[in-house]
Image (cartoon, rainbow, N blue to C red; front, side, top):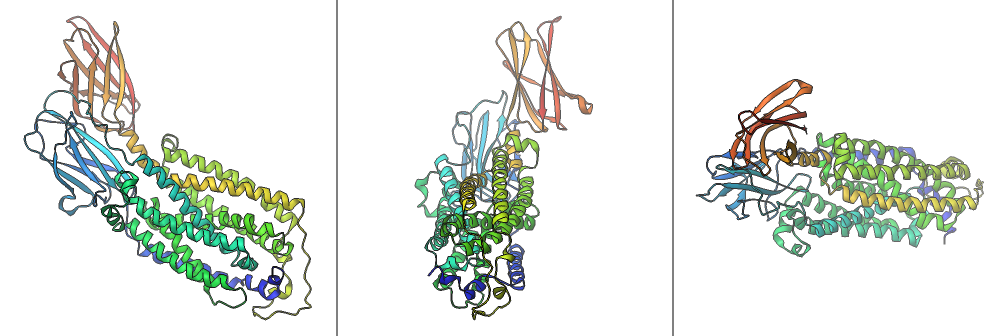
Length: 592
């Protein structure tokens, strides 16, 4: 049967005229355009832009509620999100449910119990941003005199560790399934004999099955993932219902519908290779594009500006990935093991060209997406997102080197497709066989070069699997720019030597410039007569800015101190121990 499938009529079926290829390309981009036109508007990854009370503020009386402001609409429904407030002993002091005040989805608020006393209060929140990822954080404020105290609660964690790791594996399964499903372009374009190859057919259906499984699993795990709960909550309808009412849930629902239609199309295309199927190949290509678009619409790209460009870039990135990595899988598992010189003669050169174009698309779109997600060299080095981007770049360069070696081997041994396709095949678009006496140009038989090529392809596929794994983890991380904001929002602590073994610990509420609280704690020893502090930014000739410290035992604090610009600030501390003796110490801190 294998040799019979190489009859001219069959080979010609796999070779499309340029006009039809252009029509397919136009159809693909038309569908992409429609998806983008009707996609909901979104903004950047959700970050805190303000709060009431202000983070690090000191109040004379307890407020009646706490409100957190974000830079985009956020989700809190269905037990996914919350805003909890505790005192310094870790006791809950909020009452009622967390809501969007006045219907404003970019804010969350919760009421506080009446009669609250002096204490340090911590408001911990969890929300889900437009890109479907959970964001957790906290703000602190102080009521009454004294200094900020540590609370017994360590603060919220964005995700449950086991649930997060499980989700990483599920994403890898989804990406692998998409690659295998999209890689079937090889057998539906230039390798028609593959439709009757058991290994190729198994790859197609494996890709379809893995994509379906991954999509269903993502729908089920998204609720526990966003809520920060364990896998035991997968069966809770409230979490699934909340997921289904988000953009993430809509995108996955449409993906599963598209995959159902893909199954029908595949069944028809794989039933026989002898009958004309109209434009089913083009329909299948459009459906796979829709599946790839659903990946982009439910990830980081959907929360970037401009959204249409970010989603387009991400979709092109995924399509290029499937064409290259999926095609490699079909070469390794099905095409090369057949050792058919005729098939190698026309399939390998075409794949080489497609792989070359895919690499170019991956490089361009990957660079753009990295620029969107990282945003700065600091984020590239300091954040998990940036570090994963660096790992992915390294793996991509390794794949690029191996792919170039494969391409050169193909060019040397099998030449271009135009020299391998009989003229009689290319001159007709009918399904009747051409002249049986037409002369076929001979092709080079597989030899040592073929063995080396197969080994290179094997290593490429292995590296590609690692790349997909890194990608699965990468899409779970907040973009580098957002992660860097979280890092810079952490308190900054410095130590200054005061002599005689005494030290002063100076703590800023954040590493970001703006209004900050300043706390100074002295080590054991006689209490000073007075203590004063100033801040200056010599590089921009700012300051000295007075820091109005108020005493409370051995601690001194000041709230809402304005550090108006980013840079390396110098905080000078003057500690007077007697009428004639004082110690001056300075510390440096970088604010971003």
